[in-house]
Length: 220
Image (cartoon, rainbow, N blue to C red; front, top):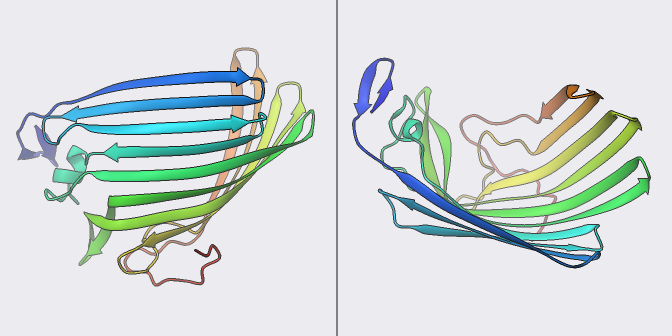
């Protein structure tokens, strides 16, 4: 039963089950292979298999390929902004990350990623209200930078910056409500079994209704 503002929207039974398995294989100190798989079964959709493959080389470079499957939530189906015609979302991602040690207390990581979506679940504004819908084909590609520092025995600082290009492949426009630039800074200190930390996050401006394609930095 799903209720919104005290009003019953739907009364139906649904069940989702999942089985996950992962294997880590260490050839030697310089090579590590990860293999993962997940089987999802629901009363509404056919069973779906998702996979993950990762290869770490010389402890510094990691290549990863993964697939994912996500069904709409009850809120996305029947909530205030719901859409009962939503379809499941599928994604295929690829990434590479390389870590460069500066010294014993500092390291820098740089990476690139690409995620392609089929039936991506997102929102758009209809009139004055948002509504969930599917984007048939979408892609998010980007680059990421991470700096990490341990400046005291139990204190850490990190700074992360991501530039991404989230594109609706049907229209060539940027996806709405997704920033191109994201940055965050985190500082933490451990006190025995306790930890105290603070984080600041910056998101670039996001459009709420429509978006035109801006100048691309990441070319085909």
